[in-house]
Image (cartoon, rainbow, N blue to C red; front, side, top):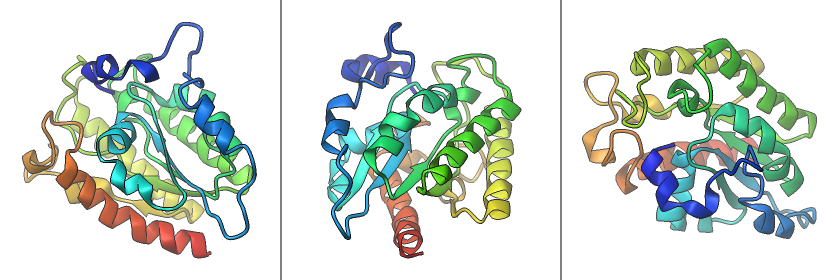
Length: 224
């Protein structure tokens, strides 16, 4: 997501030859190419640098049995569609947690179009469901602005997409986890200072809030 994160994490950087960077987890995914053993449930956290930093900086969360991080910094939903099969379907996931859309708003790929971004997320859900993979959708996190981007009206765009995702989740009976309300500051748009160093990416206290929200929903969804 953040330009600095791309520099700090060169192994996951996209190249001109690999638009969606499906090679980033290619070796790890080989280990998961075999179907899970009886009783094993694989949960893929699929997203951008919010997910990537969660895994790289606070890896203890992903020591839980079956938890798998597939986040790549800077990616948009256009990239997500490209690598969803290799990083989710082909890993024999039982459940995928999708956190998507912030980098679309930041215009990391193309000018932002909410309809297209929302449609891309719908497609991710439909691909998962077609492969009998359960889905949890999450909100985007709050952000007043993206430091690397000139995108305007970021809070309004985040709220609009979040509202649309929540409505869609209710209509389709998909679990929805609202990170936004738990992390937003009193101004209604910023990520609380206690949860971030840059206004966009959580630090440990922020991720701890997210963990408390997502784990019970994962456990409940896997039992269905």
